[in-house]
Structures are given as C-alpha cells and as structure tokens.
Length: 307
Image 1 (spheres, rainbow, N blue to C red):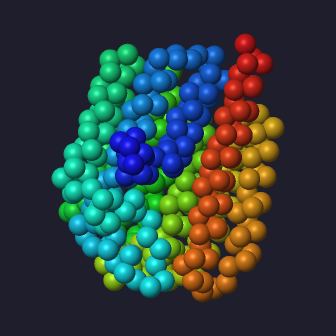
Image 2 (image 1 turned 180 degrees about the horizontal axis):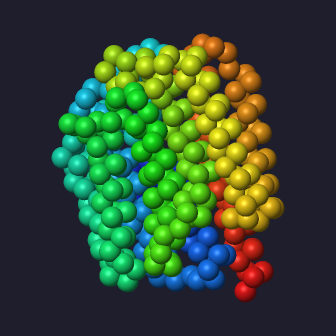
C-alpha cells in the first residue's frame, strides 16, 4: 500500500465526516443568522478540526493497544475489533504510530494558533479543551472513557457536537451564542450514539481488559435501551431547532434518516451476538452524516434566500 492509503487506514480517515459536518454547521449557522462567511478562516477551521479528530482516533488506538484492550478484542471469540489494526496487527511500529499521531496534534494546534490571531483567543480554549478530551479519553491517569459513568459519552457530545459547531461559529462571527450550542445537539447526539453503539461489538473483551464502558457496567439489555433513548433525544433536538427557527422547517426532512436505524433496533433482541450490531453501527454512521447534510443544506439554502 502507498503512504496515503496507509495514513487513511491508520488514522481511520473514512469516519472524518462526523467531525467535518459539525464544522460546516457552525459556519452555515453564522451565514444564515448573521450573513457572514469567511472562506479562508473556514478552510483553516476544517484543517484544524480534521487533524484533531484523526489525532484522537490514533491516540485512542495507541492507548487501547498499550492497555491490552485491542489484543483482547482480537482474541475474544465473539468480539469484533474496531481499531485500525496497525498496532495490534504489527503493521506499524508503536514509535512511528505515535509520531504520526502527535504530528496531527501539532497541525491542529498550529491551526488554532493562526485562527486565534484573526478571530480571538477563545479559539485556543476550544483547541486546548478538545486536545485534552482526545488524549485523556483513554490515556492514564484519567482514562475517563474507561470509567463507565457516562464521562465518555459526555466527552463525545462535546467533541463532535458543541465544540466544533460553537467553535466554527465563533471563528466566523467572533462571538458565542446559545443558538450555535443548540444547533450542535442533533448531530452531536447522533455521533455520541454511533460511538456508544460501537462498544457493543467488543464489550466482552473490554470487560476483560478493565475498560468499563457503559455497556460493560450496565449490561447489554440496559445499554440497548439507553441507545434507543439517545436516538429519540437526537431527533427531538432537531424538531426543537426547527420549531424555534434555528433551522428552516424543511430541515425536518432529516427525520427520515432515523427510519433505517429505528428498523434495525426492531430486529435486535435483549441479547445478541456481536455481529448483530454491525448493521446498527453502519446505520448510526449513516444517520449522523445524512441528518447533518440535510441540516447543512437547509441552512445554506435559507441563507442564500435571505441575501
């Protein structure tokens, strides 16, 4: 494989839309509500956010590998490993993997510094907070993603909802707003749902490794009920955003993206093999991206109409 292919696989580049969509939403919210859009600041925001996300993917793989969680996921009969496989599979040395991860972190921080010079010092608050969440999700001594008290889910909601939407909006406008924070909730919760559902694929191995996710702590049946409530909550916030005018009413077309995901829940029982959760993972990813794209299109169209 060439260098680009290796990079994409090691960093799990294919899931980058879950970070780029909220960045677009923040900028498009500024465009529709304030009539402002700064293309070069937006591109730099995309670069910084994408770098931070890929750093998060790789640093999580690194510490899951060091803790033994990835190896156990490969060795446990009914578990499905969700890491890149570059460390657990011996395709890249730990040193080279770490160097690539920290290079991405450096690019993200550099982008934040440049943006702060144009938009204000608060940009660096977003950048530093995002970096701390990404690193300590699985890194010692905090490892809050292993603690099974909902800290990990709250971190995902912040990292893939509130911070990128609010941060992107701030870069464009130089101000913060509750509207942007509320706009972040539908896609933020859908991405939280996606990350929560991926724990079902290897929760038995996580339990052996001491990785106490909510699926491990609550058990499969209770965790599955919580997963459904995350779905309802995400689309409930979409309805709220439309009702109070943050997005046009035709953004409610995004509700249709819930249908395939809801149907998969209907095919799951109280206890399921890990493979039964693969369609749920796929549908969760599609719902997050497609709902976000519909919201983006609605904000863009409405912003153009208002010009």
